[in-house]
Image: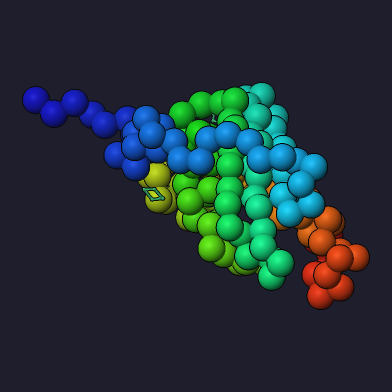
Length: 140
Ligand code: FES
Ligand code: FES
């Protein structure tokens, strides 16, 4: 008998073995920090990126106080952003995350949290880079 699968194997994998859990020094000038909460459930996600001089993401970390889907979503995002420029990271959509993890509709806000977190982290690192690198345009 086949039991119904509640979660796609990618979620189980990222839930059991979350990648890049932890923190970077938020006062490091090359680190951007995004801290966001989901009003629907009260879950909180912190996502951090470390960039090189060209604004390419060389490292990422997260800490998520939330459900398995939120943890899996943040884990996926930290994997995806590494090697991307901060502008490329801004193009990551929660729909892509949700599709990758096959999240059910009630869990879409969990992937939304990850999109919001990466946007907030990029906004933070851009605000640090403005003035240091005039080619960096601030995020609205
Ligand atoms: Fe890890 Fe796709 S299974 S990012
Ligand atoms: Fe709210 Fe998943 S249930 S982030």
